[in-house]
Every structure is written in C-alpha cells, then in structure tokens.
Length: 64
Image (cartoon, rainbow, N blue to C red; front, side, top):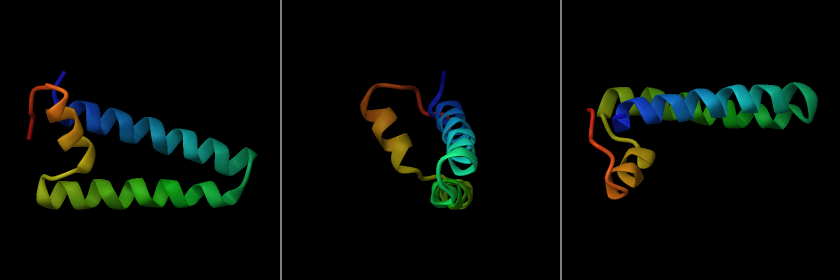
C-alpha cells in the first residue's frame, strides 16, 4: 500500500470517528473534522502532508 492510499484511509477513519464523537460526545469534536478536511485540501494542492513524511520514514512506498 502506498503513502497516498494510507493518508486517505487514515483521513477517512479520523473524519468518521470525529463525526461520531461530535454527535454523541461533544460538538467540539467537529473541529477535528474541519482540520482533517483542511489538511486534505492543502495536501491536494501541494502534494505534501505531515503523515506522508512519517510514513516515508517508516519505509512505506511513496505514491504522490
């Protein structure tokens, strides 16, 4: 699996988890959803993401 796929998978999991926490725990969890969405937008424009750097250091094949 490439870094590109792992980043999108991780983002999807975090968004779904934060939406669930926002619905059942506190609406403040929706800020995490906004942060992940902004990071996805930024990474689509620059092809750079902090998680991708960590994954490359762990030896995962680059996909971008």
